[in-house]
Length: 521
Image (cartoon, rainbow, N blue to C red; front, side, top):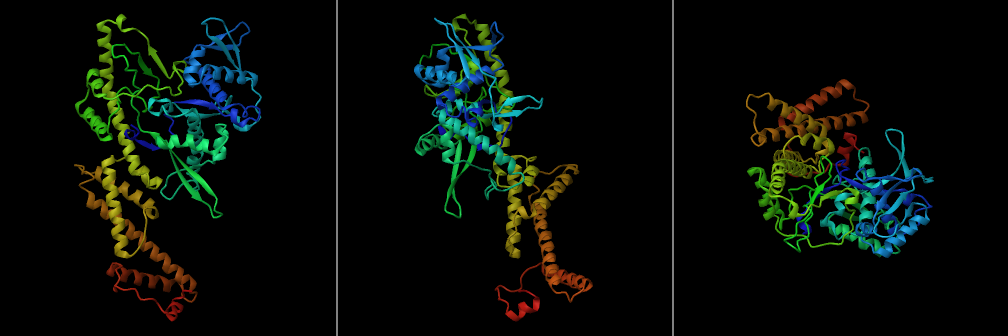
């Protein structure tokens, strides 16, 4: 199943919905010693308390509290009843929460301590309105998807903190290449010792076990590098899923009516949509998306029949509907009329076309980013206005022009060395095409584009030779500027006539006398 999901590099997108892991439980000395499981329980309670969709209550003293049932905390955390009770007691002893219990089935009252004494500057931040708020790590909600059911809370926290450090590397990559590899990929560095403190691990083997889960599922990529002093460090590359299938429901009883899940998602949140279903092969999945785009709206019955296999039941950690990740319609099928069922099916069918169109755009954008991931930033932005197919054609013309010119002139110029000139040439090519009565396709203009790129390298080579000649004459103080100008014009006139091609097929090394005469030392 893992091979059916495509991943893309993490780019600090603001469209991803997330839960919050308060940083102060790690940055403050008075709290970072508590058990890791207690930090998980606190994170769950914290997100429930700060969720706008959850009803808050006020007691007679004006203190705000939420009602949380014990069984919900057990379900959300995946821990046993005794463990949940012990971790809540740990939080109470450390002054993070207060709990009022009731006999019977009535939910307990939980108060969140918002009057914390924090001394570390990383524990808080000031928002745009000037209010002081708790700082946090972002825990993406897609980590709680059924596809990642094998993830432990330890691996989820590891991914979240590494992802947070990747944000710093991405920002620094705009002005520095310190955390950018030779292929242009941004990475961050985290030691096993730092990660062990996050999950309260006693040995590096424990960290490795949870980290390997992220590697196996494609959420992380790690490269081991060595320094000059033979010290090793780990380069982490954070990945995100392009899209995920809808969480499958329990199919043990086919006659049972399942609850319909409505997902609260951001406008551009692409990870959970009603139309994505699991396919056995990636190629089949892509073919199905293409058919949807061509045929348009399909009814809900056809989509359900094509969904195929199902996910096995799981006890993976999750934050339930108390955190408003989803709101379930609990109406029984016996109470539903046929008219209501038909209206629901029609509503899903009507929304499907828009969902398919949106996913098609996201898939196209992903393909373009994948083709341009090794290109310099300015050139990559200039090419993003083209389709993925046209980017492939332009890339082919660019690489052919570079390779042919380097081969003809025995040079080794790269794309980065003429990035600004290439961007300007692309702009001129596009403007020239828009002025034509009948616009030509990029494929039809392949030879023209290739010739234009080749001319860029030719001009760059001439400029370099001019600079080299000027350096030589700067070392010879006996030649005045007028002599240099005349000599330069003569040399370039001869070079243009010969097109800078060598007249000899073999390279003959210069003698010491010849080098001395040229002023080369």
